Length: 92
Image (cartoon, rainbow, N blue to C red; front, side, top):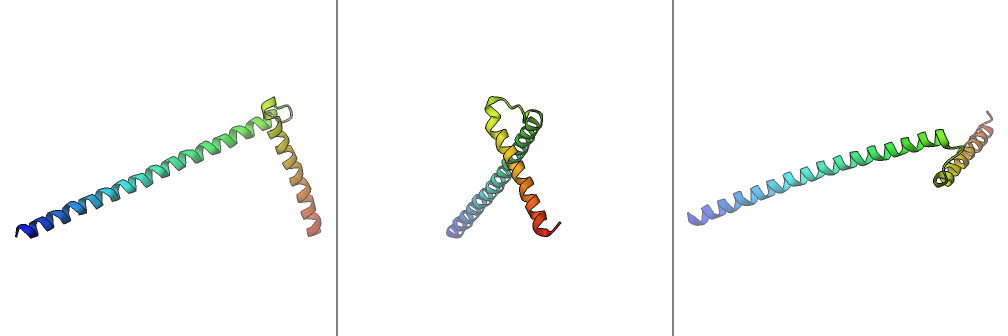
């Protein structure tokens, strides 16, 4: 009987270890999800801040932002040209 008791004890111990590891993995996934949610919020806020800056100072940006503002303006102009070409092709 001693042998069967040891097997039962080992199975119980290993089962608890597996259960604990599963709980740790679930918590890890949950924490990583929370980190991802926070990073998404930060990215959205950075974009929002950049948009506000561009709307207020895009025509007269500080030196550090001249290239970025110029790129935005060029992209906006390209969009206008492309949309005009799309309308042209559609016969609008």
